[in-house]
Image (cartoon, rainbow, N blue to C red; front, side, top):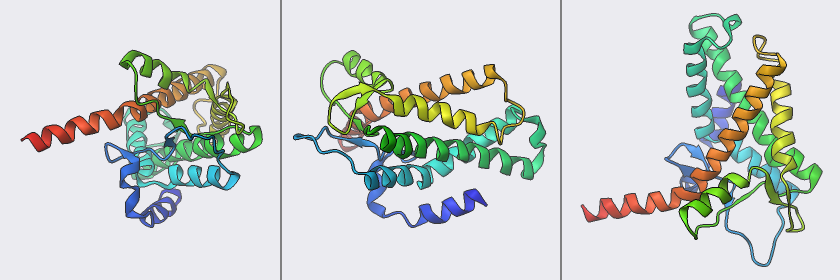
Length: 212
């Protein structure tokens, strides 16, 4: 039911959002050029960003994909087997994305006056850009434009992991929580790297296609 409702919302997304996906799947709505002069994102803007990330068809597809992976690995045996079990795996996986998106893109950024956007550097050496992209997991802009520790990312993912204990009955230990928290930070760091370098990769692919 959760995935069906999300799919209906995703189907209503405007066609212009195609440019906001990496590889046509991974949502890329948080990426933006650094505004000059600085313009903060409003509360409505933060919640709109969370909604776009959450209800994008790419997020739904990722939830279904990782749901299938979880079922193959039997990460939660209590879910059982068959299609009903897959529905639970997929809904739980999608729930991870939805809860995490709203906590890190909207709720904590509004509470803590932080900006959830990823400001792409787009220049400099590959190594410096890699370090910049990964570092944005721990550093972000406040609404004032000043850099600060990314409490929204850390607290948001920690809260999402705590909430997930309600629907993952087989992985509620402190060790499980620590692993899930670390994995989520790593996934978000990898996502930032994709956001930083994807435009370059895309340009090269298009150039190669045009040359042939």
